[in-house]
Image (tube, rainbow, N blue to C red):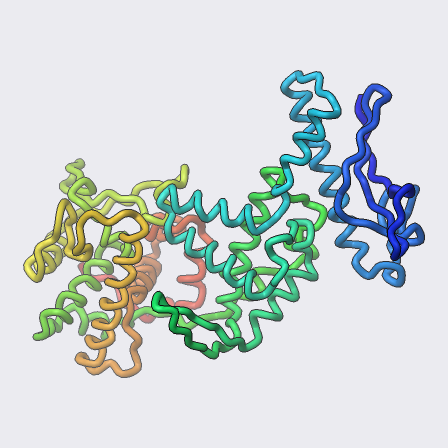
Length: 432
């Protein structure tokens, strides 16, 4: 049976009095020593427990360093367990090769970069952008990120990261022509920080599952950093009945604004279908089912999730007329139902950016529509149709499970953020 231990190598003392810390592996009476690239002074070392003494006067970073040592023990255990499961009668040389080939393991930056590339390769472009933004923010915060280990992402690190994001900062942008400009940014809001920390928590959880990180220094969970506490209550974005009826019944003389109004209404009548999902609709999503023709689709952001159920929407006369009006404004390309995508042959990343650009124009036209309809206090956006439908479903006493499925939410918590502070009497009984 093999034995693993962390030791302080007393036979090599540097000028500053420190000695290297090594991993010792013993098997069949033979020993292997692997350097861990950290050192300690004898008075800092606890021989009995093979770790740094828990004394901040001797070493203020003893918790972080001991967590690293624990991760190295865990890594060694994993390698040996993998050998045993494969029935390999391994040698110390084989162990050393496997251990050293894990040199990139445990480092958050290469792990995060690899995850981003995987997301891009599997067409999860939105998620890839989310994690890329996390990486960018971490690089601004931490100039030692390339060497940073998961074991160092402890609760202190996370709290310092949160404090950093709350402070105003300057961002320097370089154009393709090497022109630079400096932008003064305000500190991140609680909801913005919430997005970053959800991504950070997800990547650490994934790393733990894949034995790239240890549970020992996990900064979240019970007694750890409370990600949910960052959430800030936002104004619920829905239209009350009178304003909704005005949007439904007041066509615009401007064909571009009218196109935006029809997209808004299509989203509303298709149970709050998102702009990205409308953009991706093709005639492959039209199915002849019992009762008539249906739009059958899975949300783009959840399409590869195993448990995602398809949403089925009956194409009634209202939906059919709106689609016809939209197609009269502009003929769609290829097999698309709607003319949102206007450039053929785009790869997944190009398509995502293309639709984001169309969304910006759509929201600008909705803003013009609100002005045209004399709604100065209304911020009309793509989300308003979705939230308005959620509100209507609630007032028709639909269960939250049904609302969640129709909106294509991954869980009920997301649905709750739509509905929790809605007044139940602001929209009267739904009209077809």
